[in-house]
Amino acid sequence: MPTEAQLHQSYELAKAHYAELGVDVDRAIARLLKIAISIHCWQGDDVRGFENAGSALGGGLAVTGNYPGAARSPDELRRDFEKALTLIPGKHRINLHAIYGEFGGAKVDRTQIDVAHFSRWIDWAKSLGIGIDFNPTCFAHPRAADGFTLTHRDPAIRQFWIEHCIASRKIAAAMGAALGTAAVNNIWIPDGFKDSPVDRKTPRELLRTSLDAITADAFDTRHMLDAVEGKLFGIGTESYTAGSHEFYLGYAIKRGILLCLDAGHFHPTESIADKVSSVMCHLPEILLHVSRGVRWDSDHVVVLNDDLRATAEEIVRGDYVERVHIGLDYFDASINRVAAWTIGVRCMQKALLLALLEPIEMLRRHEISGDYTARLALLEECKTLPAGAVWDWACHSAGVPVGARWMDEVKQYERTVLSSR
Ligand code: RNT
Ligand code: ZN
Image (cartoon, rainbow, N blue to C red):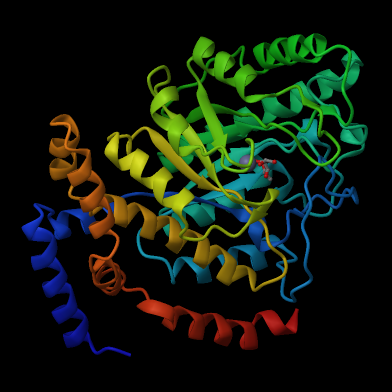
């Protein structure tokens, strides 16, 4: 492993290299460390939550793997999350689902959830100086067992889920107010059909009415931001989902709320990167669910691939850093869960750093002057610039392990904490 002096030397060499291209490396690091990633709590316990409702996950979601050490309680989940935070540079956020409330063994139905059930999460987040984001949980519940929630034909079931989403908005707003940073409250529903429906219209009209009821009360956007997440298909809803991308794009624009783009929710060859600048023409802010589909919306751990890089490039090139909320959404139970968090967040950050290190002024000049040869040549040369030395220095200066050294700590944590679960 390199010494501190060697790390610094590599960094200085990289800095000189980038300076020649007009890139200020120190500025890139400073900008990177200001970007908070919303880290999904559900990687830590395979989307189980603490409701004890005994319902299967459902909703077309599937977690596979049986790696030991999943968190079994809020305290274990928080402890694991804290461990991951010590391995990731910068300050981040936690993204909670409604099923992660602390119900003290009582049966609290989804319409009954209240900010009191999240007070320990709020106190904990406050002590760490991090923000919280939130999600109503419209799956893994007897009333979602037939696959319909906000679009259910039965008005009583629809009303149940409307009330759950209203309760979630209130909780999110209270979290945002308590922590001094707006909580994004993201609605995703599984509703759809396995086989081709003859009525594609009614569920969507019902969804519109349900969403109108949910968002009827205005909240201070300094405390809570509404988001809606579309999806092309799920397991068991291969032919039709009511909450499609077009449905929510229209709804978000009409209501001036956030649209959530999940990387796994489109046709497999479709990338969310190209969508960012399109939807940002019409929306003030968006939420991303950065995920990695392998052949389908499989929610694999995010890695530094071309898709991720393209998404980060679009955020940075478009100067959208302040308007794009970056959340992660994946769940892999076949590997160490603290490592799964750490890998995904660090990769997201590497992608952002690579984008921040682009010689964008030079690239733009080539493009504007029509010199596409020079644009292509420079883009390709950028791929082998010494970004690794800059990333290592960013980690070092943020006080987190450099390179693969963080895995030593995960192994140690596995031996001392996770293995006894
Ligand atoms: C499902 C959506 C949704 C969930 C989480 C658990 O396909 O991506 O965001 O993954 O809310
Ligand atoms: Zn998602």
